[in-house]
Length: 397
Image (tube, rainbow, N blue to C red):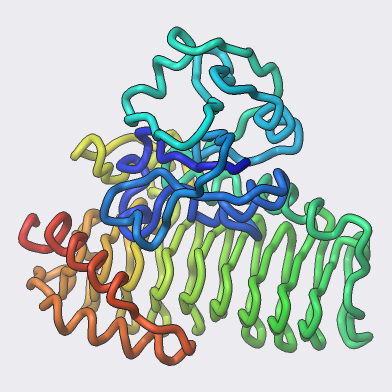
């Protein structure tokens, strides 16, 4: 048996984060969606995604396959309902298809998902459903993902010891350190939620953490950083300055002073010293952002929404991002004044205009950046970047 996480027609709505990964590889909390489903279901997991991503993110074969909308947070009750499905059955919630079960793996076309309730034996699911359908949902529902993952990871386990130089405000049992994690002279506030520190991660002296917060394996929170939850930082991230309700998927750096709020950064991003983003309009109105699916600005319905940045993008020192800015993959932003709110992939420049970043130079930079974390840019990764280059780049602006 296996779980297949399907993009289910929602991949384009999560761009630019999904240019370089399927929906199921997004990380709203401690786990990626695939890791969370695999852990709770105790089954092999795979993906049903765009063809150019399938080599790096393959499907999983089994005699019985349960294909699930990859945007769904695997709450225990939902996982149980999915595992109870038998071949020919579909799980639905208020007219929406959540999952289906079949013998063998023959993935549905994305458009077929909304027809499952009429073409398959539908079973209604009355429980809670949390779905990450847009990029800003990752920070909006980050806290729920952390709580879900924390409960699974810490059940019947004991935290590594927390050094006596630290201060805990709230329940000390809600600070959990994995093996090799280090924290000295930091303050942990668990009044609003837990703090999870991954294996080999470090919280430096003077840091202030207000949960819920997740810090991935071998990640660092710098000296004197101020981190407001819900916030999640994936493996090997470097986090400094002030951060509020933000998600960094992994291997990205915000190592210096500056503000990051209500934002999502992909992997291998770097924010230069004193980079700041606005997360609130001067009018206090609802924030609009660029949608790749609608090819237009859309209303998030949120009063607080900051920066959405695709993989391998970076900013120079003192860069200012306006409220609701969306940056594509492998962009390089620098210079004075606010750049546009929509910055295509492979753009090189700022408020005064953009040039197209050469693909070979972009891949060489990616190679050097990843090498610093002892991760290789593989030929498969290069092919993915080539596809993204032709789908979203500065020539469109």
